View 1 (cartoon, rainbow, N blue to C red):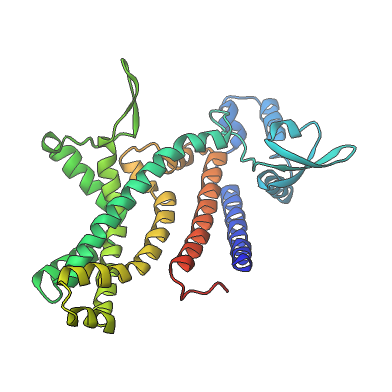
View 2: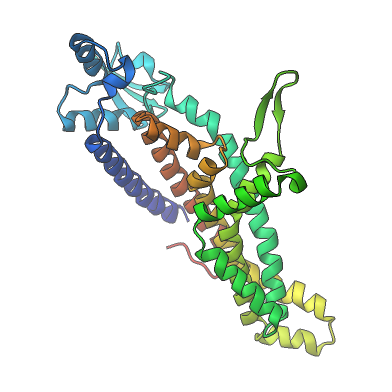
Length: 350
């Protein structure tokens, strides 16, 4: 297993480096001068030049890339006078002018707020995590339920209806579903549903301060959960129909066991292995791919943060969110593969 984990980590590192290269080059070709974003459009040429030097933008592109890699790398080399701005965990080697450190990756500072990018991301991530887990819970509960019903009622109108809805759920773009659901339940029927069209997990109340608003979570979580719910429905249905043909299921019926007991303990239990795999994979997607949903429902997560930063051309924040999302995706996929191997002994770690 250790060799497998190391192999996956190396593969994940290559993916992460690819993301770093693409993102860095992409923001080099976008219009806009970061120095003017910081000091304003009316700043004089001398001030602009000083800011560009502070940001390292006066250096050749390859030097900027090397410096960026050095900043985001856990093991890096820095000048002794510059190392104070990094969150150093351990000093590995001290030279006369340079120092080798093991540190927390440094993503820079926002052009607009001058805040550390990590602090901005960590402030927004709990909202994204709450939205993702709520969507996943909805998807798993209803996906397994509807998939099981469709398998049990195979060949009937119930099966056809559920299969049609799941196909629709898979094929409908998330941003379109979000617009329809926000308009229908958050605006048109808001008087009956009591659900807001936009909002976040916590909101400031003039009298009570920071207040938890779970009702704001319902519509975005349901919208985000539609596609994984449809996938889990079809996966559960297909897996159950395959297992229903297995000999041990037929033997269970032959022994006179109740149909509900055979369905739950023989069929559904064995059908959940592929569901666990797809559920874990969807968790990575939900944590890193809720940008449109957060934007539509004004949910203050990392998706909305990235969209607003992109609108404001706040490149460090956008690049930080992209790298954070890529790292999260890689780590969750590695943990998913390991968990699936533990749950299913037929899977070998190679």
